[in-house]
Image (cartoon, rainbow, N blue to C red; front, side, top):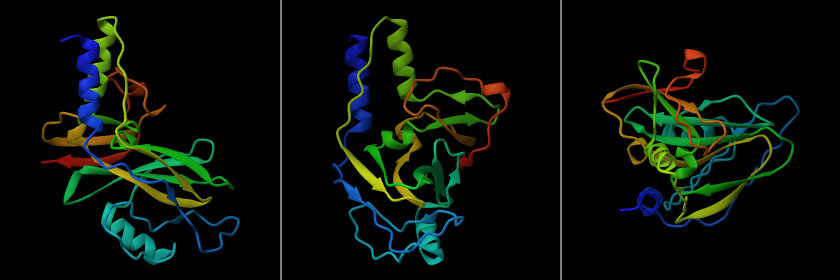
Length: 214
């Protein structure tokens, strides 16, 4: 089978199988004061409707109980991303964003690739693990062909200023072939770019979310 067709079929299999979400409008009902940290927004974009409290300590407690408390990466231009998991499901990761800017920001979402495009994964030996998408892209480039990314469900979501919001989840098994062991999940910069380097920058794995896959 030609490499280009193989790549397209793989990407379709990874990104399909999910219902297309509708555009999400997030609202904040509390007043933010200069110097205050961003507040966690109680929002769940799953089909199950829930009554979340307003942004605040009780809200954060409930939403972290559901998705895990995120490890937040350094902000760039006022936008910081984070990754979380729960002890009972360590390979199921959730993506967060902290809008530290003074204005509402729009974010594009595309199925599970929303999360998978934002992460790199390292094993205990400090080796970066290539994602299945990286492997497809690496093979295509070696053969002189190109891959085409497709998205079967996409939307945009608006995050108010000084709000930390949940963006979506994905299981590592959909994007990586990982044996049991301990791993560190880091931020991929820039998000979505193919990365074939298996060594960490400076031979030192940056701080990230630690998970153990049984």
